[in-house]
Length: 125
Image (tube, rainbow, N blue to C red):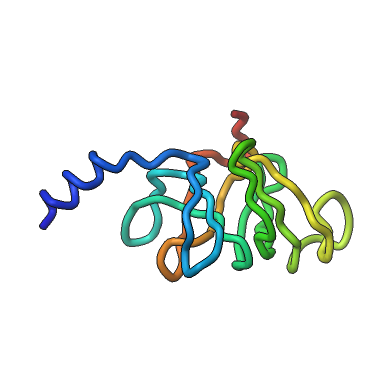
């Protein structure tokens, strides 16, 4: 079975920015090979789903709903549901972020996924 999965994974090369439907919702691949508790695989930002994330310049976890994905420029729009009470990331606002500025991201992978995109709050990409 692992050989079949390996052959299929080589035949179907997934790319960051690729769009797919997950449970009937538009989704954009933001990492083709994310590592998370118990496994690894692609990470998707899915419109209408809850996400938890950090940014490169804001280390606190922020929660929100992914409202729109922009595969052409690798951006996501997020309506913040649990964030700060001041500053750029305020609960109740919408932010549009580039994929490269996301640090930690928990998005869609089957039921849920926890991922470290390989950057920390101190990193610059």
